[in-house]
Image (cartoon, rainbow, N blue to C red; front, side, top):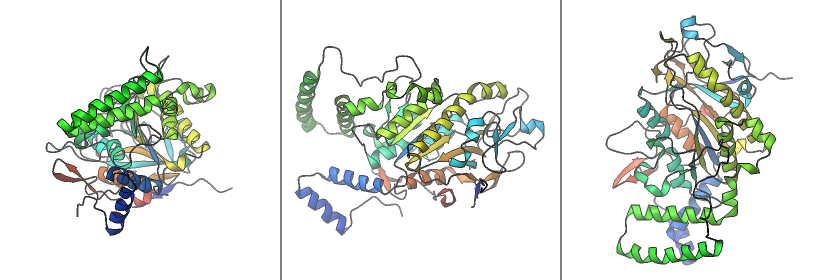
Amino acid sequence: MAENRPFFCGSPEHIWRPNRREFLFVGLIGSLGLTLGNAMRLRAESVAAKARAQSVINIFLPGGIAAQESFDPKMLAPIEYRGPLGAVKTKLEGVYFSEQLKQTAEVADRICVVRSMTHGEADHDRGTHNMFTGWRPSPAVQYPSMGSIVSHELGSRNDLPPYVCIPNQPNAFAGTGFLGSAYGPFSLGADPANGGFKVRDLNLPAGVDEKRFTERRDMRAVVDSHFSHLEKSDALDGMDSFYQRAYAMMSSDQARAAFDLKKEPDNLRDRYGRNAAGQRMLLARRLVESGVRFVSLTYGGWDHHDNIRNGVTTQMPAFDQAFAALIGDLSQRGMLDSTLVLVTTEFGRTPKINERGGRDHYPKVFSIVMAGGGIKAGCVHGSTDPTGSEPDNDPLTVPDYAATVFHLLGIDTDKSLLAGTRPVKIVKDGEVARSLLG
């Protein structure tokens, strides 16, 4: 039987304008009574249909998780670098994870660990901005999140919002930036791990039945039509789009059902774990299966300046169980090939344990995970030196990471979007990391 060997992976701005063929196509469908907006939507759907990844689940671990206590243990380093935890062998020959990732080690042949992620921002907000937007922060431009870019470029499916945050939008950088409110995330407003979990705003108010709801919606449309002639702005357009999506979700049984975790069998909920990590990841799978394009969820707090042993051993087992269950569940359903799963954080931790038994901020090198959606399985991309201080080879920059994600979704990273009157590229100076692709 063949061994499971890891792949150690090697190393002018424009705004879309239709060419003659596309122009004639738009004119044709316009003659059929469709708008240019519909034409653009159809074009986006055509692009998405050819993409490797049809949806994204971004699992963000806020605070900056230590690579040494997760995906890049330093077993042979002196104890002050190695840290307090041991390591566990994975399904891949010669590859070890932290001892707290025993279940994830069993699915290592289906994921790709990037051990050489790097940027230069040691501040929480600036590092988070990098990983959510693909850009370094700038005082001149408020950049949109990657989820909002996906919402803008690919639009919605099945009356569901294209971009959802679980349980809430976690930070300002997960928002729309210069794109406007129409492309913002739908936030649940509640943790799916809580008893009696119910998504806010999806149920009709007491005393309002379907008939009355439809009448109110029609009446609002008449009023909006009148006032839209009096004043036109991006904010109004955004609110109009927001209400249209809200009405579509409230009036669609299928859309409402996508958020209903009670429809999942008890044994599957148990497999993920009846906790924040488990139920958030299970709901994320349910949402992408129903048609949501980009789900961003957060779990835990990983800013372990003190007592990193306790911080990791308290939180990691729930993550380990849920993540392994997610990868297995997606694979069993035939969804892993079309769902890009990311495990990200804002930066790493210092190579050396400090006097308080913790690690401090360190953006020079850290680990993330990518899986499914066109990513090579059983892959270890890059490496670090023996103490985890430097990337040894194949560093992955933030622009390259963003370019790779967008490429897998079929989004043109050379395209520019308008920030006011200024064209801004979706990704600047980023190259697709071809060695990550399956």
